[in-house]
Length: 505
Image 1 (tube, rainbow, N blue to C red):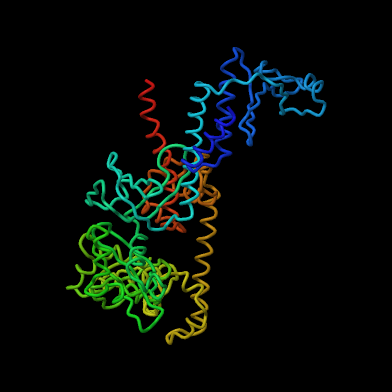
Image 2 (cartoon, rainbow, N blue to C red; image 1 turned 45 degrees about the vertical axis):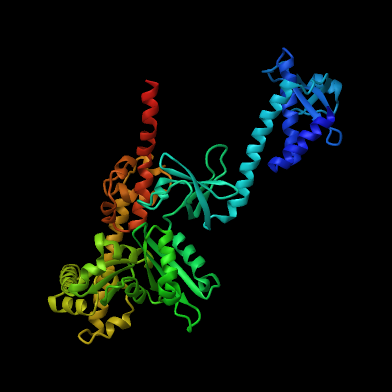
């Protein structure tokens, strides 16, 4: 019998590539289960297989519990006072054992062992897959579409299967079993059931990896791939530069007669790829990214991280692109919010902003129109700039003397201080509800800021739009999006529970 066990362990280990110790433990668990089934009582059993011979010993065991504890399983537990008589050094939580007649490794035990072994094998295989691919997240992999399930694709990577969700497929690509594809390994999860490897064909990183594959200079690091933006299946932009001035990065990525960029496009179901020359200067990078549209001038707003891009009337539709595609991809690629406008529109916008600033200075600083006009002409747009700009900068204005400069700065600071005090008082009197205060990611200052603007509950926050929150002083777009989505999680949770409640009814 011992030889038979050793043969089973050796055969399964070689066939499934599982560690022998894992199989020994599975057999021990199966034999222990068969032992418990042979006895009528609710006993606990342990089996120990000798690794050298395959013979095994069986023991009945009792868990040691404290003397004052009520035993839930009398046939599997014993009190400490009784256990000490048999083993003086025993502790609570350890086991007292006595030999038990072993069951034969017969059909029932073999069947139980098979089930346990297969479970252990599956667990070991899944663990191996996770260990093998865990450090490859973000890499490009190649596989063959094995089958389609409810719109998702199961892709054979050779050593494992991966799931390509429908949401991560290129629109209207029409994958079929047997198609060989490249995709980005988007996620690796350790789960007892279901898929573990998740692919994406829509990630911008896939474009970068494809160019790294198709362009030897990029693979060698001579050409840098700075980033990409995509409208999957339709259009993409990728920013490139060269560390060697003798190498044309765009020409290298295009290839002879467009062969390299065409290979990337073919892999992405015909997606058109624009190759953009990366520039360290943000304004120049934006100009390059909007190609083929020609840009006349750019106004940069560092504070809002936005640019007003002025183009000729005839270039407007080209710069914006169909459905705003060109400007949207350029914005994603550069990381700047881009506002495309004609020179006339820019002048109208500038006039509106100038009028607003002129009125602000006249009302808040209590100055005449001439002084306010000078401030606007010198580029001042708000009170903060007047209050905290270096004194020398305002003193250099020809129409202003030192006394006027000091008075303007003092008035601006007094207004801002008064405004800050009023804001603090308003916040101190605000009383956000507990559900808003306890929401994940919320801090007391933000909660009071919201409550002071009439948003005192989590439900009220969930009903807001981002633009609504941007009207609150000190609120940024990213922060507004973050807290609104967190607040709306209660809606999603309610939707998930609704079918369960219906089923229970």
